Length: 215
Image 1 (cartoon, one colour):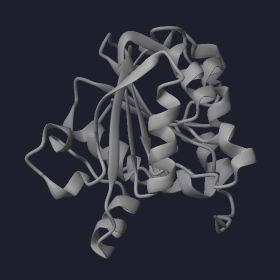
Image 2 (cartoon, rainbow, N blue to C red):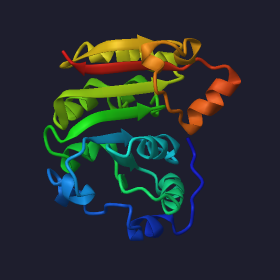
Image 3 (cartoon, rainbow, N blue to C red):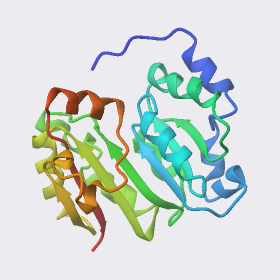
């Protein structure tokens, strides 16, 4: 995936009141940022932020943190955030491999993984956000009954993810290969789409989703 460089995006993100730059200093102390004890949910690889922004607007009693590696993408979410009168959404620009440096054990209530990079070459499997290596990281920050939700249009990545979960402390409690094929299903309930999801559904692509928690 080639990203168009947005000049000044990194500086604008660093200067934004909605971006937490010294995230390592808040490990175990994120409630100080939000000023409450509400559950904290994160989206890893949030892109331009449509999903997590809508989630925050719909659920004022839940705190959200969007995590994105690329400044040229994250800047779009930061710009939109300025227009909103909400206080339950912040952003971190970082690589997902640093996730354990940002959050304490049991600090996170739920993790959202939406249309993550499939890293199609086998030698890059451990870089996939649904690899067993990343599930080990999630295990160290999720509360005991924490939940992981994953959506993708990539069937190969989805099949890989279902198998990887079996090698972790987690288990899949619900999944589908056609999320939008049954809008009455429990797994679809309350579904909020991402930018990619809207495009893929319009093209007729089927969306896969799984929900996992500790076994």
